[in-house]
Length: 251
Image (cartoon, rainbow, N blue to C red; front, top):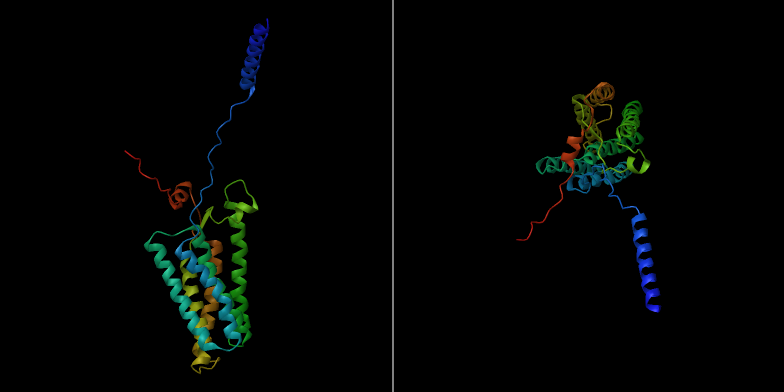
């Protein structure tokens, strides 16, 4: 009888266990993430960040009237700008992050030079307001466009995650000329006390008017051009994502 009870208990236990196993829902595989991420830490991006971090020191040198060293620093930053662009094109390291921080580095240096030179009385205040006002307006526009083109779900964390590309900023022709003119003007203005050129020199004043006019035109060009801000397609995003390295199978 005792043996029969044990068999009955074992059969009942196994039956209940099988029933509980059937009641447990099967784990469903999670759908793959639709986020497309690209490599952020690249040599061009590192050089660009170095330019951004160096800009305040250039401004400090100008305020301290150490114009010679500040001019040399601007030359080094200019060479670095050319170098990171060459590396990005040569080794296909273009990225959404680079398209954002590269012009941001130019603007950081430009804003620093503009404020420092205006503070020192070497640059007209009106021109400084025009240059900085344009950059502030474009910055607000860029923030709005980034949010509008960010693939869902839209969260602040994803908004500031620069490894999720959504747009590409393409400088217009007039903006490229304006950037070159602004940098040239800042260099000439910074060099004027080094080489003893007066601030009211007619060539320098004409340069200031030309730069101010192209600054206004370039700002309007960004707002009216359809090609200045390009929304990336899924195929374009996929090309930017580095492919994982797959080890060969052992024979």
